[in-house]
Length: 95
Image (cartoon, rainbow, N blue to C red; front, side):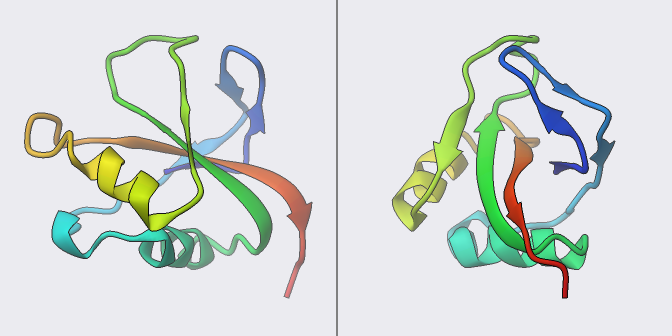
């Protein structure tokens, strides 16, 4: 999960990467994605984007809004074992 960075038109800069291992694709949902972000101390209104690794800088990213979007994302597993998720803060609500 890429976080604490800035989303630019063709890249994500100045951020950090956190890895979440052994995620069960059958249990993945927006709630799981949001929980991962909260574990990294991110709160507020956040856009969640994903792209497949190896697609290169500037590859199209897909917005995750609903559980259906997450189901579409995990459809690439097991062909792809890593999926890059990017956090874009819209409104920060520090707790």
